[in-house]
Length: 410
Image (cartoon, rainbow, N blue to C red; front, side):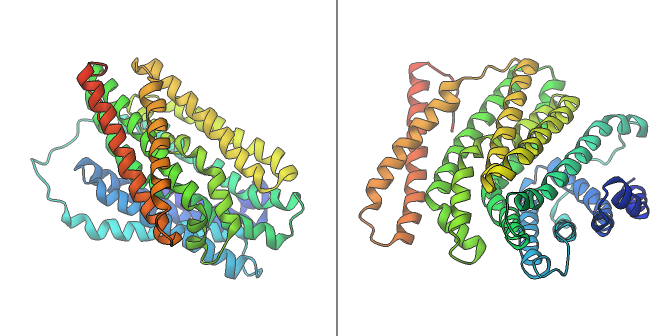
């Protein structure tokens, strides 16, 4: 199927680019993206193979490698090719995606022999047509997401130019956003990506056994841990945002650090999306997932078109906040309705925030004894993380002993 789709897209790339998108510069990128389709399909199958054996470390490593390679390729091509007029920004994005997909495919194939197959090999009782019927909503969801995401990314440099930036400045800021700011924000979520991969089979098995209590317990524990991890990630971004921007850009880039700090508070919603989408798919709400993704990107694109020409880069920040907050609140409400899961603000929000603030204050006081800033930042992250975890563990232990909650674990 992927080869058929790839050949069709490659053949009709001219029609899609010149007549449908009205942009001849997109013809070559469309053909490059068509090559990605079979590779991406095979990569997804191999990831599913690893997840089936619960070897999520390989899938997580692949996701990490893909983000690093894609970000590095995007930054390199924009810096040395796009800005100098040797390549369009669309081609740069397409080539970076192809590089990431190819590298991940090679990596996963090379480590497949490490899986020791157990049990008898059998045949599935699901027919091909039944498989197509089950897979079609997920497939359409993926295509819609890719299309809207590509449209959103293509509009970024265009709207930045409308704000009054020169072509070089607009492309430079776009490259910084795609290759430095977003990867910096998403980097800690690799752990959650691995967790989300095993959520689908775990929740599906619990639902198949009609064990609604287990479904609620899995959802509650996963959401709680995701929020706790997200809040600690906010701490890292706020404290080390400037250093992260410098490391990723290779120079003292104040702008990148400021943008990372501004986007830090949307991290819980970005990370929750990874987990909530897995829960939604496991509970059979693929249609809602597709519609919600459409609404999310329509909000993001609408805010982008309105705010960026008036406010510049800060309009991009607003678009991310608005789309992520609205879409993930919608996801959470649907999950609560579908599963009967009761959201507990004290455990999920208030308790980790108070624990984090306390840990940050104690760590800040301890850091004053260290004269070197680099060593101080490292000490701050480690000490605040340990104190944060210790406070949460202490509160949970107290809750269990007093009977407030029978099972709360960090």
